[in-house]
Amino acid sequence: MTVTIRPARREDVAAIVLMLADDALGAGRELIEDPVAPAYLRAFDEMATQTGNELLVAVHGDEVIGCLQLTIATGLSRRGMRRAILEGVRVSSKHRGRRVGEQLVLDAIARARAAGCGLVQLSSDASRVDARRFYERLGFKATHVGMKLSLEQ
Amino acid sequence: MTVTIRPARREDVAAIVLMLADDALGAGRELIEDPVAPAYLRAFDEMATQTGNELLVAVHGDEVIGCLQLTIATGLSRRGMRRAILEGVRVSSKHRGRRVGEQLVLDAIARARAAGCGLVQLSSDASRVDARRFYERLGFKATHVGMKLSLEQ
Image (cartoon, chains in turn yellow, blue):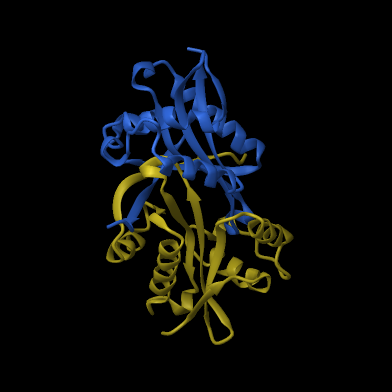
């Protein structure tokens, strides 16, 4: 399935939120309202002010069917390397298994490389066994433990 | 051991690089020169242009004895949440075991909370068993697999 990968626009936010919620782990974490809840539009606008923090979408025809967040940040370690971080990689459930996720992630890797990054990293919930296999096929190595501390009540 | 935690200054870069290299995994990855290799100063200057990407140092007297990188980025997932990412947490080998790392990480968590983050995350090399226990003591949960793809030759 051939898709176009491009930076997300404000009018894509509602479709992205539906994909974030259309997921075993994401379902309970998102707010589904029509029109889209203002918190998501505020977050989108805030991302636009943050250098190196962008949302990409996969588009088929007029439909947004995949998304991911690509954050690029420089650090001192590894000789002052730039690092890319992937978050929230999702494909609409009716288009899974058609390499949409692969095209999205490969596009993000190409953007990271073009931006001079030496590393792309992500963390995947340990229960997502298929996700781990998917990233391993793309060359990622599961060398790390991903740890999280919630600051929410 | 009481330390002051503050944002790093350009004149701290040499001390930070020594700490990054003073580590079982970091040793082969860094470039130790005197004066400090220009790549690190370039990276420091680049970080200063990136919103939400900062280096913190722990200072005792006049000496920089610990460092970490704190990156804050907004995303759409989890209702448009801001997320903090910790990288490159290091304490000078002669001051380890004196809660310097704990003070650094707690300070970064407080800064993340003050910036409205809902989550603090990091990935730790799976071989660093002590690091994992250290973060678990501070409340982090090892729920994820951390995956990396090198883009370097």
